[in-house]
Amino acid sequence: MAPVRRVLLLGEGNFSFAASLCGAAGTHVVATCYENEEEVSGRGRAAESIRRLRERGAEVVFSVDCTKLKDYFLPEKREFDCIYFNFPHCGRKAGVVKNRELLAHFFHSSAEVLTEDGEVHVALCNGQGGTPADEPRREWHNSWQIVAVAAGAGFILSNVHPFRAETIHGYKCTGYRSQDKSFCVEGALNHIFTRSMPLLYFKPMICETELESRKVSFQVPQVLVDKINRGFLELNSNHPVRTVKEKLTAGLRQAFPLQNTDCCLSLLHEGHLNDVCHSNIFWIILSPEETPSTEEMSNGLAKPKFSHVDFCRDTDKNGWVNVQEGCHISKRYYLRPSLLPYAHAITQRGDFLPGTLHVLSGPVFRKCLISPYSMPVFHEVVFVCAVNRGTENSCIQMLANNIKTSIHSLHQAVSSFKLTELNDFAAFESHLSKIRYFICMKTDTSGFCDKGSCVGIIRTAHYELVSSELVVVFASLNLDLLAMLLCGIPDWRMLWTSDTRFLHQFPRGELRLFKSFSLYPPSYVHDVSFWVPDGEQFDEVAFHTIARQVSGEMVISLQLIDSFQQSETRRKSLCYRLTFQSCDKALSRQEVAEMQLLFRKEINQRLRVTLR
Image 1 (cartoon, rainbow, N blue to C red):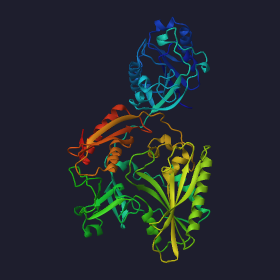
Image 2: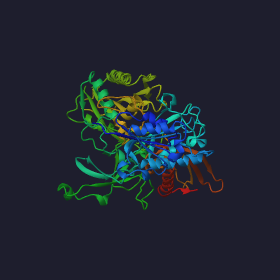
Image 3: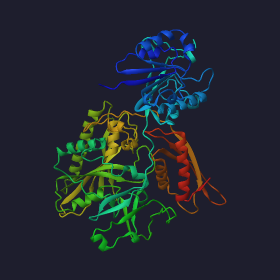
Image 4: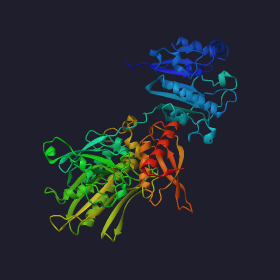
């Protein structure tokens, strides 16, 4: 037998709304109002509604303050599955500020009596909420800012729909405290809130990986702590990134012999970097004093320990080091920015089969500027094949056609939205004497720019093989970007959410259109201005990486809005605007203010800027 659903109604005027809900199977109604019983009973049809409620087993409670809910119920009766508050109002000519305060106290009070999976329903008159769902929409400062107010108590807006009073049998809206003049319910909206996952602050993390045939441990860069070893591509995963990879691989298997070679790909790499700027690398340093002796290593008594370095010109008191040419460091490793070095290693193995498509996949890491489609970590899949010289162009075209066909098929299965562009175009690179084919994708709903819509690249590689008659062709695809475009996921951060409501939308092996469970999240804007150290080049990538780290990826935009240079001293000042917004969690104004203060402190210490 299903458990009884407990429903709490607040601010009832004549109890007609409560009476309309009462009697539903498996539901226990607790209806309350702010006034005492004597005041309410003499108004309109209130007495009749109260009698019907009590006859049907509902509880009716008077003189209930919605900002102190736990005071009115015994501990064993405090948990409600749903709380309704229709048309809250402070009364008379209370302004928007007073009504925001009422809602803020109400949400904090509701959090104390709501079940973990419960809902809070708040009906507001048209325009009051301040969300894009209001038509017309009020100016933000003139609204009740309900989503931002709810975020302060840990709630997110998960649904919003019209409040249709005419469909509620017997319901008659009253005015403030049951006055005869009722609220205008035309165009009113019902806002449905759910609990948010809390903001997480991760401790430093040590990770183990294979390196040069031995196990090593290293400190993970703090900005990546929640993204290491998430297992999205593992066999038991139903993450859309894995599903996209499996569907693409299945399509290519129809045209090529195929072999998976994902095992034992180290997170760390050493060696020459192609196509990746050194400032975009997460460096891991093996310091001489941390190196165990050969005897300790051979006896398994110690593992080499690595530290992470981010920026700096030299080591400061916080241990931040800038890796530049000329640094005297014994050995430098970095978190892999691409799987292509491993593709090269595979072509050198004795079991590498020409004509077979070898598949590698895994997360890769790159520092990057903050933008909607720039990801410091994403899952790359690389397809590698060796073919006879002279046939490489036909192989490239065959790969491109098969990948495009698979993407088309996936898109048609997921969405009714039109795939407006899926092209491959060639760009001849004279300095490399080779051709690159870029695979680009757009949908009517993606809003992706030309740069953001490039999901893959196919080209030849100049690897030395056993036979000079063979040429290596590879294709590299960004699985995260593909999953976003195919499933209509508007924000890359959503792929990494710990909220189970994301993965529940993707049953094993299926791709579906994503439906956001956090609507119209509030955004907050802060500015920061500072003097750049004399004679030094400002490291903007490091600046953005600090913003990512201190905010837990809550900064969605970081724009230079002003710069000037003093004519006398030649000192340079920069002013940046930060926009904070979460895609899956409640983010309050106070939390953002704390992030901004920490950001100011960190850029002062790490980048040696002088704050203004």
